[in-house]
Length: 63
Image 1 (cartoon, rainbow, N blue to C red):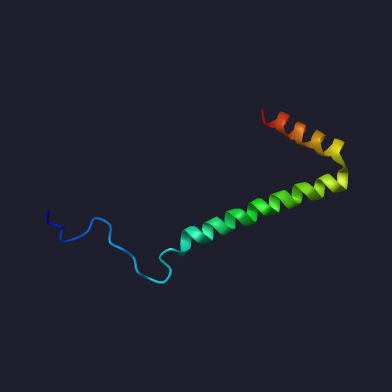
Image 2 (image 1 turned 135 degrees about the vertical axis):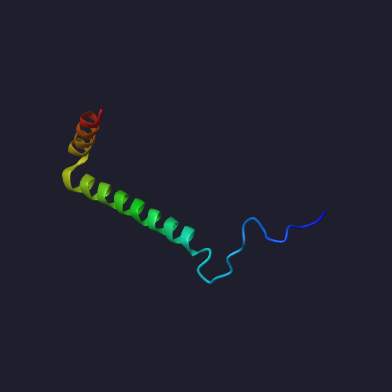
């Protein structure tokens, strides 16, 4: 079968071609880690009862 002269999706062979998805992945992982650390810090600072009460109140305010 004949191949097209111009491919539908030309390949990008630049040094930064595959870098953007990796940067987005690491940024998301970093933000997720910061959220977990913040939650643990609040838990240790305020205690379990107040921590869950704050989450419950926040969710109730959203819905």
